[in-house]
Image (tube, rainbow, N blue to C red):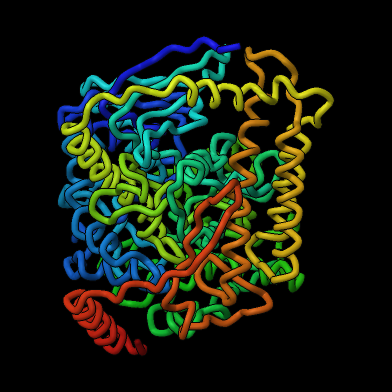
Length: 617
């Protein structure tokens, strides 16, 4: 028996409506392509909104010493030198133009006294570099892109979930989706497809991501024959809410620390001074007095001439330090640390951090102008993702592109705060541009009826399974297991156990039963989400097991030191073969001589700066 479905034809189909997807769709349409956006949720409900602190770009408004070279250096250093250096160069050079473009399109950034876009400090950045709108930067970017997109003639399909990418030979030809409200089916013929589906953090039980973040794009790419890279590198944001339980994992912007927030343990000690890695010595304050002087300079609007507080170390360092304090018995009452910004005063806090003030007041009944917040690590971002060409954002499958968090390469082993928003607009623009240009030379694909019916049959299977488990039970158990065994600290035996358990979860997921209704059936949606989550979780776990060292967002308790001779020069590549996740290593391509000179130049500048400040590089 065949199922009915509706067909649609487009030059470019963008899957995902966050910052990357919107920017890609805008650029595709501007290049003359008939463009559609398919979004799993509602327009405006994007994880881009959670990027509160700012958008990293070397505008040089806060410090004239900044520039693309310093931003490139900081990104590569933060990535532990595993980032795709071509992507890091493009990003550093083009991000300022993308931010100014947003301003031209109506984005209202905070201003300096000279009415330039203001920029704040963030962990891992040498100079103040984050263009911001209070602590609602991502929200303003989404608002601006949506407003712009409306005028580009883009068709938008909301509450549609894509479950299959169609292919003709090696080339992607479109996708098959179902509507989440009534369960009708839709086939999209597309000359090119862009995956902008965001991340995978819903695979962990403590995460900042909402229900949509189930790795749809990563799984679609795998199933279509594309490759993933760097999947072991998952960023646990240092500061998520830990209390009350109903809001556990909700993000506390790094902007709190960028505005002078202090991390303390239950002994009222600023513990981050004890956790500065050797590679960052000289970059950060060594005494509380020096750290407080830095805050005073930032508050007064002067150029920071002293080293930054250790609260502004890279996210992986801060997250692991908080976890270490908790394990040593020095944590806050609910298993985190204290983050205090009250010394900045009520007026400054409400002006600079209005969202954080309301978030804690409404969700936790904590007045952050008077009392400290309780915060702890939360699964927040995956540095790994779909492997793409640095310039075009095309994947290893012709006709399939990826951008934003779904793609990989820019961040290597660890992402710097603020680089996510500039990543979205820089590579979203490129993905849309090259997908549209490619589509101009192609005929409209004719979809294979049997392939569409096969995809629909797979989508319907949870509704037809009899006496299977409730998918919600499997969902909760699997996320708890990932949190426990593939979380912020990992070790070999637990990773091996996780692989075995994931194989079991996959069998259970395929047999789960969600009832028979297609209308408003959240159990059906969850049963289907489980299938991507299992394969993506296997990819992360296998990569973590294979990388026998600690680096960036990947920490092995049994192998705590970086192993530069091999793992400092190799990355993990994931693909799928006969429904099995496979892995291999590839050597990192040596950086061009020109960019090596740029790195040396910036290192020399930073060393001289540290010497002037009385420290060491």
